[in-house]
Image (cartoon, rainbow, N blue to C red; front, side, top):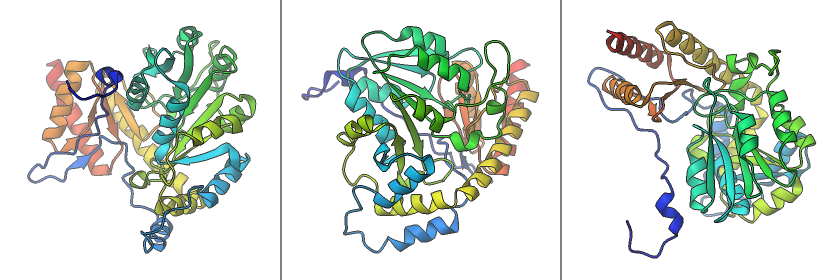
Length: 374
C-alpha cells in the first residue's frame, strides 16, 4: 500500500512478472524456457543491419519508421496509413487500451491468455471480463459474444493463444464478428502466427458441424471488418525480442487514433533496420519457424505419451495443463534440473529450446509423472 497520490486502479492492477531465469546447477547447462524467446542464432543479414546503424546513437530514429512502414504495407497489401509501428506489439496493445478504455468501460478477453491483457486494461480502470477457455484450451467465442454489453469498448483475441497455443478458425471467427457491433474495436493478437503454419493446432480446427476449418486469414479479415486491428511482432519468429519492434494493421480511423497514444521515437533505428531486413528474408524466418514447430510437435507427442494432455500448439511453446499444485511442483522440479519454465497457476508453459533442453524436459516430466502417480 502506498501513501502517494497515485491512480486508484493500481490497487487492482496485477504487475507483469517476467519469466524466471534458470538456476545454476553444477554439471549442467541451464536453459531459460520461460519467456517464449527464439533460441536459434540471429540471421547474419539481421546482425549486419543492426551493426550498420550502431554508429549514430546520438540521433533520434525516424519517428515515422518510413521504410519499415512502407515494407509492411506492401506485405499486407494495405495503404501505409493503415500501419503503425510500436515498441513491440505490447505498445500497440497499450495504445488501443489508451484510446478505448476508461473507468466504467468494459473489456472482454479470453483467459488464460497473454498476461498483459489484465494488467493494461486494469490500469485503465476498466471493468475486466475474462471469459474462461474451453476445456481443450480454445477461445469460447459464443461466451465472449454473450459477454459483450453496451459498456464494452474493446475485445481481445489471441491466435495462437498464449499460453495454450490454440488457433482460431476462420468460420468461428466470422460467426463471432457477425455478433459484434460494428463500432466496437476487436483486436486479433497474432504474435506467434509464423509458428502456426503446418502445426497440429492449425490443421485440426473444426467447425461446429465437425468439418475441418482453416485458420483466420488476417489480411482477408481486415478487408472485411473495419473494426478489426491485427497485432504482429518481430519479437518471436523473427527473433528480435530485445530490439522491441511490433506493429498494428487496421483501417485509417483506428490507426489515426492509435498514433496519439504511441510514444514518438519508441522504435529505435536498430529495430527499424533489423525489422526491414528480417521482413525481406522472411522465407528464411519461416524455415526457422518450421524447425521450431517440428521440435514443438515432437515435444507435445512425447509429453502425451507419458500422460500429460498437451493441447495442439501453434506457438513456439507447449502448455502443460496441470492444476495449481502440480504446476508449482513441476516448475520446481524443472528449476532443480537447470530449466526455467513458466508457472501460470493453472498450468505450465514451456518454450521450445535447444534439443538438449527438450530431452531434459521430457526426462524431468517422466520422473515427475511417475512419482505423482505412484
